[in-house]
Amino acid sequence: MKTVSFLLVALAAATLAPLAQAHHSAAVFYFVDKEITVEGVVKSYTLGNPHARIYMTVKGPNGEDQNWMAEGGSRTVLLRNGWTGDEVKAGDHIKIIGNPSRDGSFVVHWQKLVLSDGKELWGEDTPTDAELEQLRHRTD
Image (tube, rainbow, N blue to C red):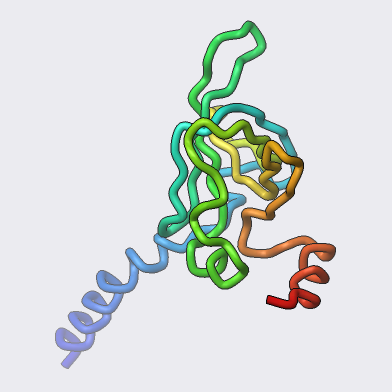
């Protein structure tokens, strides 16, 4: 009986471990208490799972091209809140405001996306208070 119980527990642990690892806090990969702004030209954009991603070219401090990736919120939540997947396209000039990566790589956890016309879109699962208020009064 102990062997059967042990096998069931081991099987449950093996089955659930990847699921627990798949959902992670942004604080594991990003300095959530720091904010940076990255501005550049979109190379590609996907409103995919597990996160929306924008790949972009940014001019570094010495004028060199840097390849950046901005990681946003989950596809499901963003779709529920009005995203369509057509927000940006290759060639668009954008600004990303978000949290820098802990490992120093050219990756940012985006909180806000600023389009070339000045329109601001939040990119995380949880909007700011002002954005929540806008969502409450949305008429579409």
